[in-house]
Length: 248
Length: 245
Image 1 (tube, rainbow over the protein chains, first blue to last red):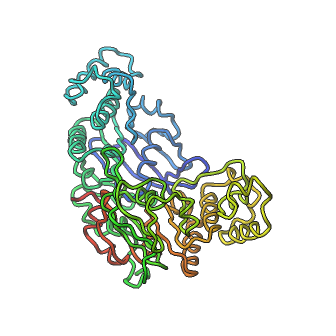
Image 2: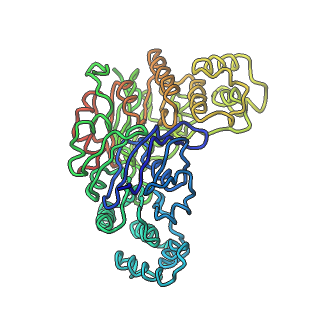
Image 3: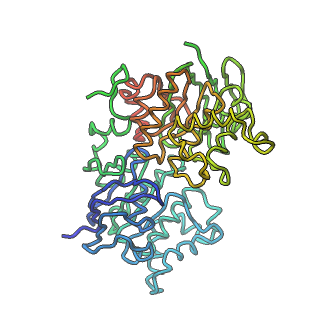
């Protein structure tokens, strides 16, 4: 079986700057949900930007279902079912909730299909249904996050990448968002989540991938991955002795 | 050892967000002290308050034994406290050398506009550019530098004011490994010559190897402090990074 997404030794970075991803390889299988964790600067968000086409690979291969998709534009990737929810909550502030959701389906020509998906999204987010005519800029942070998630779902993506959905949200609101992601991860959409809050992110998915310094460190079932002894070194640095020397 | 910098009960809120909460820290003279913590812990806000970029809602900042709460950055610079920023600023039409002299409190912008760069200033600037390894760029426009070179320039320019304390905000961010090594080496050398550092940085290997003392913040508060080895062994600190309550 070919993987939904297969990255092979990808290197990339921003502008003329140094590589952020240093030859990363990883595989995303359909029907499984993933959370990418790792310390600051590990390359988590950069990885999502690469897969959605905002960043082009400097070298290496990006395969989706066996086809090379590296270097395609975001709209071309969207047509292949790869959608992306960026870290910055980007609702169209002067549009209503419904209009925002319709914007997510701008590439879908079948009007009946759009309405069908609209119904699905509003069922998934009852609060958005209640507020469907409200101007999105007046929503709370959590509700705006739901709009961005709902908007990404309007293309019925095969792969949905979500960058730090809990950023800046109160804990209870973040709980709701993670609950929704958990729900989505059990649907046909494969979730690839990036989350600073490793514990909460991992609770919402099946599989954890740990990045460090732009490469994959290790991966495994989401449950229990944080108990791996390698986690401490990754987050708190190579162990130093009490006299300040590097051990080992 | 005496405290060079001390904060007592600092608070700073942005709207409903309590960015820094009852923050009391001590930076001992001659130390390299690091301030770490997960994203959103309040580290940069703490820096902003200490450095006078923003004013605290309450609390006190004591530097060299004097209450400097609410002092503006330029005044603190004259007293010996300098700071670099996470995002390097560039004075685009100026050369690297001109940028260096603007950093000097003796002349500053007025000196630069009013007269030529004085010879002694120039010598000092060239010495410091040499110290960070970018003398060859002295006459290059600052906006032509790479990100890493801008970081080195900013680092060199804060040295123009002969600081006693340097606040370094993420010096390693976006810097390639070779430059990073140079920055680490220069910080250690300056520290040996008596300059105290307060460092905010996410690259943990750098933090743990350089620091004498590590202060951990989470949710605006000081969560723990200790030697690098103590902090690395502290489960509460690890849990804070992983989002475990």
